Length: 97
Image (cartoon, rainbow, N blue to C red; front, side, top):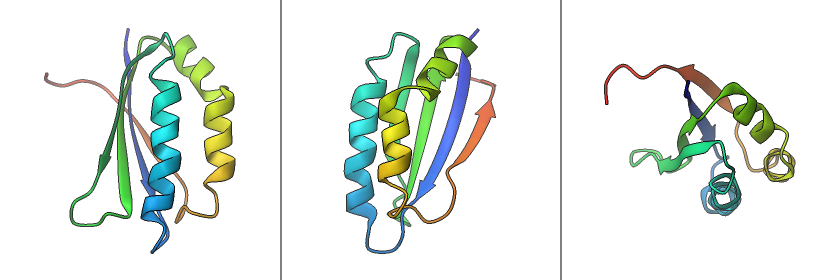
Protein backbone atom coordinates (compact mmCIF):
# COMPACT_ATOMS: atom_id res chain seq x y z
CA UNK A 1 0.00 0.00 0.00
CA UNK A 2 1.40 3.40 -1.00
CA UNK A 3 2.51 5.95 1.54
CA UNK A 4 1.95 9.62 0.67
CA UNK A 5 3.90 12.48 2.18
CA UNK A 6 3.79 16.23 1.85
CA UNK A 7 6.92 17.99 3.11
CA UNK A 8 7.20 21.75 3.52
CA UNK A 9 10.60 23.41 3.68
CA UNK A 10 11.15 27.15 4.05
CA UNK A 11 14.38 28.96 3.30
CA UNK A 12 15.74 31.88 5.24
CA UNK A 13 15.22 35.17 3.37
CA UNK A 14 17.77 35.52 0.59
CA UNK A 15 18.64 31.80 0.53
CA UNK A 16 15.86 30.39 -1.68
CA UNK A 17 18.14 29.71 -4.65
CA UNK A 18 20.86 28.14 -2.53
CA UNK A 19 18.30 25.88 -0.85
CA UNK A 20 16.78 25.02 -4.25
CA UNK A 21 20.15 23.69 -5.44
CA UNK A 22 20.24 21.28 -2.48
CA UNK A 23 16.60 20.30 -3.02
CA UNK A 24 17.16 19.53 -6.71
CA UNK A 25 20.09 17.30 -5.80
CA UNK A 26 17.88 15.52 -3.28
CA UNK A 27 15.21 15.02 -5.96
CA UNK A 28 17.75 13.60 -8.39
CA UNK A 29 18.93 10.95 -5.93
CA UNK A 30 15.55 10.15 -4.40
CA UNK A 31 13.86 9.46 -7.74
CA UNK A 32 16.35 6.63 -8.37
CA UNK A 33 15.19 4.72 -5.28
CA UNK A 34 13.17 1.61 -6.11
CA UNK A 35 10.37 2.45 -3.66
CA UNK A 36 9.98 6.01 -4.94
CA UNK A 37 6.82 6.32 -7.04
CA UNK A 38 6.60 10.13 -6.93
CA UNK A 39 8.94 12.82 -5.67
CA UNK A 40 7.79 16.18 -6.99
CA UNK A 41 9.17 19.50 -5.83
CA UNK A 42 7.06 22.67 -5.98
CA UNK A 43 7.87 26.29 -5.13
CA UNK A 44 5.14 28.59 -3.80
CA UNK A 45 4.48 31.45 -6.23
CA UNK A 46 3.41 33.94 -3.56
CA UNK A 47 6.41 33.13 -1.36
CA UNK A 48 9.42 31.69 -3.23
CA UNK A 49 11.07 30.87 0.10
CA UNK A 50 8.64 27.96 0.53
CA UNK A 51 9.15 24.60 -1.17
CA UNK A 52 6.70 21.71 -1.07
CA UNK A 53 7.36 18.06 -1.85
CA UNK A 54 4.61 15.66 -2.89
CA UNK A 55 5.89 12.14 -2.40
CA UNK A 56 4.58 8.64 -2.91
CA UNK A 57 6.42 5.59 -1.62
CA UNK A 58 5.52 2.00 -2.45
CA UNK A 59 5.61 0.84 1.17
CA UNK A 60 6.81 1.60 4.69
CA UNK A 61 10.06 -0.34 4.24
CA UNK A 62 10.91 1.74 1.17
CA UNK A 63 10.23 4.99 3.01
CA UNK A 64 12.30 3.81 5.96
CA UNK A 65 15.17 3.00 3.60
CA UNK A 66 14.83 6.47 2.01
CA UNK A 67 15.05 8.12 5.41
CA UNK A 68 18.36 6.35 6.07
CA UNK A 69 19.96 7.17 2.70
CA UNK A 70 23.15 9.26 2.71
CA UNK A 71 21.69 11.75 0.22
CA UNK A 72 18.83 12.54 2.59
CA UNK A 73 21.08 12.76 5.63
CA UNK A 74 23.49 14.99 3.68
CA UNK A 75 20.64 17.27 2.65
CA UNK A 76 19.48 17.69 6.24
CA UNK A 77 23.02 18.51 7.40
CA UNK A 78 24.11 20.66 4.45
CA UNK A 79 20.94 22.75 4.29
CA UNK A 80 20.59 23.45 8.01
CA UNK A 81 21.95 27.01 7.74
CA UNK A 82 19.69 27.77 4.76
CA UNK A 83 16.40 26.56 6.25
CA UNK A 84 14.03 28.69 8.29
CA UNK A 85 12.64 26.39 10.95
CA UNK A 86 12.02 22.68 10.89
CA UNK A 87 11.01 20.60 7.90
CA UNK A 88 7.27 19.94 8.25
CA UNK A 89 6.14 16.52 7.07
CA UNK A 90 2.53 15.37 6.75
CA UNK A 91 1.65 11.74 6.14
CA UNK A 92 -1.51 11.74 4.08
CA UNK A 93 -3.88 9.40 2.30
CA UNK A 94 -5.22 9.75 -1.19
CA UNK A 95 -8.81 10.94 -1.23
CA UNK A 96 -9.22 11.41 -4.98
CA UNK A 97 -7.02 11.09 -8.05
